[in-house]
Image 1 (tube, helix red, strand yellow):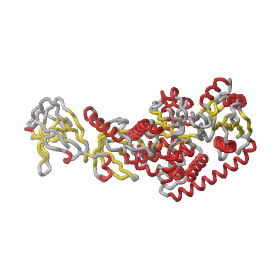
Image 2 (cartoon, one colour):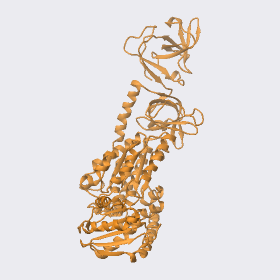
Image 3 (cartoon, one colour):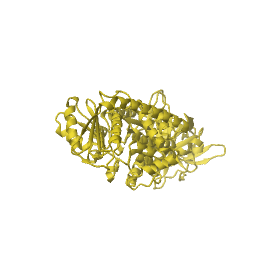
Image 4 (tube, one colour):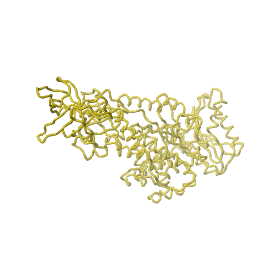
Length: 637
């Protein structure tokens, strides 16, 4: 340690605020420096002076000639270390100081978290900020962040009893203890923990802020393909990448909510892998990725109250039981519409930040007040042809550029799954082809993702979905076999569904010349199996588009919902839903989606008036042969 030289000779220290060191109980002679000032406690008196303790292991004599006052056992004074003699004896002299700066000295070598793997078995000292406090059935675990990473620090008071109850999250601390290997990572077994204040705390915070700002900066990468429309969103993505990296470094968990379809998975899985790698690079606790990141599929293309209530409940439980900060909610391939706002209002009660990356037609005025960041092509005069999967692949690369080779095929899967007609689609397909994927392979991956997600319901699927998408997967042969199996099963089930449904499709010609097809998917399609009503409607629609070559609208309906698809008709489904909400009294209408693809809900007794009013609006829509469609359909309604 470094320390200033004292004045000695029992003299008062001149103005200028000397530093007086307070030794931790575990400190030894190795932690001392001649000429430095220390707090001491009298442990014995003799005719020729007093013996003092500086720590449990550090004691020495203050000779009577070097004493200013008269002391008894237990009295405190400030001493200067005069000499460490060859035989190990220490000599001190009393120093009287009025104003001074106190600094705590912990026992061990000063280390940063990044170096702890090379210091196992050694006593180390780390200064940082508490980002999490977890009480286990045994020790209390303090997660401490310094300029290079985060390390768990364990201290045992007694089973299940909180140690250092005065220490809180965000406190600046100095910890000392032995670095040990634990569960594949490094943990400090604490000897001491002290809260820093004043100039010491300010200095640590300044270093932490500077290091965090540097570590939060995203990687400087180039887009996978040259696409001017996409580049409009580049700065928005960099801001989100910075926010996500900073959130991880600050110890705040992330709950990733994504639409449970092909594009939503192409968005969430690469980002999950990138964030897990980033967490692992900065936390010595091997289980940190599991605790700091959750990927959660949502069946609806908006944040349902059921989902937000679960998320909020888990977050509050984790805060109470595990000392975690409340999370950030990251919405992917949903989250941009007015239907999301009730959920956001619920989160606002707890100041939970929300970030959205989406390509559904947004309601900016409704959602922006609740969002920290909002990335959406519509905000830059682009549209759904830039899919969320395409956006999040680049976002994942900004967080972990080493993942690039695993992701080159994913934007093409996302685009084909959502039937993007963006001008960069051929470039994305070519990029995937360079990785050994044919266009048929890419379509099979998308179909396999849909099929697996259908049966997983609300489960994220983790390793299975990662293998299907072949991101961070170590077995390309297994990937191919799993995709072939799932895609073949999906194709079989789609054919079975259409065999049952197609003969029940009703047709009429609208006033604007478009074909309208209707199918009662509740009564004329298999229920509770694959494909779900949304995909069933989409498959019927695609067949009719192929048959006619004309503008086509398809409605698949049940007792209290309808799924809508359109090709070649300039619809605005979110606007239509808003109008129906106001125009159909007692209809209970809600819903939305893309401009030409979406879903609506209503009360079952008002199904016919709602659908009739909807068809009237569709009959008034303009025909646009070049409009095309998107297949970002809700799998469940």
